[in-house]
Image (cartoon, rainbow, N blue to C red; front, side, top):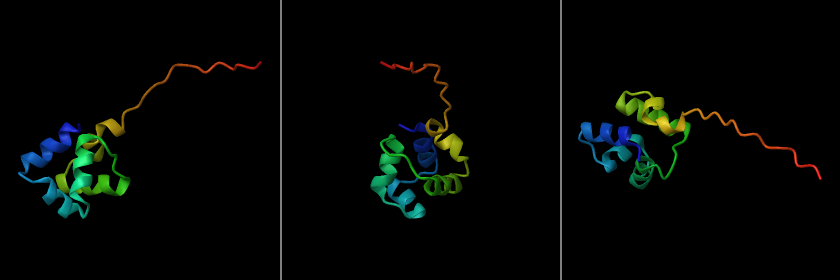
Length: 78
């Protein structure tokens, strides 16, 4: 769950339906984004950023995390 996104909506006393109407997206999509079941596109992230006045990197922290994968795939030539 994207807690920051949910908290910002609740802090402003908005329903998912009201957010959906403000962003011109479906309330089902808002719910899935908040639950982390769907990832918004860039345009939708910017709409959330504008609505809440908080950077998209803060609202969608999970999408901007950097993973350092140190595993190496060995060449398995037979």
